[in-house]
Image 1 (cartoon, helix red, strand yellow):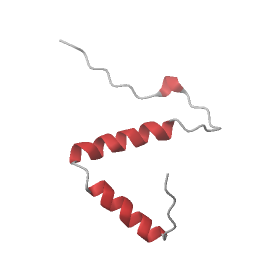
Image 2: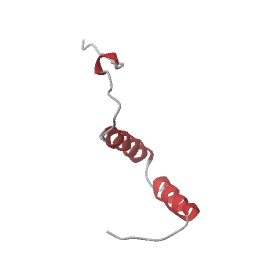
Image 3: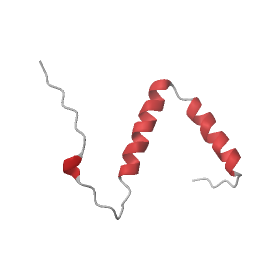
Length: 60
């Protein structure tokens, strides 16, 4: 692990550059992975899982 001290603007620029180096497919997977990780954070708010939006795909 490496710790770097830098300004917020410099950090944002580096993050954007590294993100833009990814292919379009990798960007989508990276975004989906981020969304999955965000949902793992503990919160005080209880969610009602019965009210979730579900997509059902019927196989032929």
